[in-house]
Image (cartoon, rainbow, N blue to C red; front, top):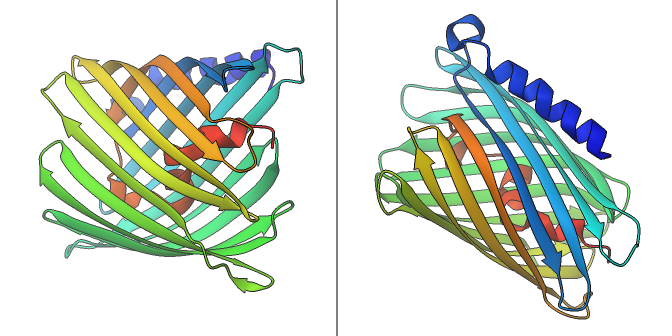
Length: 279
């Protein structure tokens, strides 16, 4: 994605964000703009990221649209690398805490292009929550045909939670032995300061990426925030470990619960920066 297209998307999301909530019935969503550095000690790339989500609720039903664009510009003069993701979905939450949702997502990265069509069934009542999902994958690069996902989480207190998910990968040869694994957590130190982090293992056609991420944020007026993230990615496909450092600003209109994230969103949140690598 060229900078002009990235700016156009940012301006369009910003224009929506300036419309009064009563006029568009915006129920949840947010915007994020970040800048970072990604490198292995020898080579380095400047990374620009813009993402956004818009969602509305109609009683117990909801629908959302989200997207993210990232561009890595290597210092050594090699070609610019783009990562573009987008998702649209709808769901319905029952009175007993059960939920059903449908979503479709598309991911375009330097090493792969795929779409993920998912049906999810979740439960969120009290401190415990969970989600089971099955997704059909149309993949032009790694041979993945389906994902079967299971998520479990626990809220220790308001602003403190931990969740773990496993995603079984199926291809033409059957189910792969090594699933995609994601462990995430967050803890609000106060009304303004918050910490979050994740550990993930993502296997792409026999190439595994292990990532550890730690982030922090400072919120103003319950809506605007500045944030910083540090992530390290290790893989046998890479000569050295890759470190990603990013800072940025965000605006929050209200977030979906972790139990409502689809598999593609969860995997990308935990280890998505690794998809910018040229491996």
